[in-house]
Image (tube, rainbow, N blue to C red; front, side, top):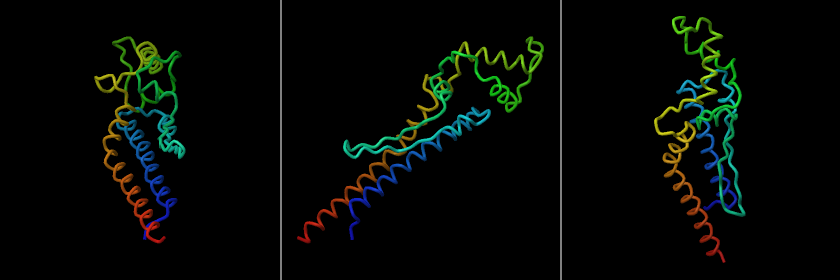
Length: 171
């Protein structure tokens, strides 16, 4: 027996919305894998939600995160000095030590030197192609989900078609 149009639409909506959860998970995993977590505020801020527009017949995933994510993604230069506490935590996490031979005797000096370099040069990109970490994850997810999206849409259309045919036979 065919399901109702509303049930089919709701099932498709849930399935498509689950893609947003997968994208959020991949973005967070990538931050952890690349070692971009000092306090975890950026990771905690990443959220993806689905937005449906039935009148226009479209579906979108909207991903939101702290502004720092955009700086990190596009290697933008912060206009102000980066967060020194976050840099200090990152230094501790990475086990980086001051080097007296280079004129950096304290952790505070090391923190300041790194912050000034970020302010001047921006964030280092992780691949040599000028593509940010968010862009890489999104492209990978698009490739991975292409077949699944087609299958989900095909199943929904098939279900609605069967329902329409069943409805027409009853008359």
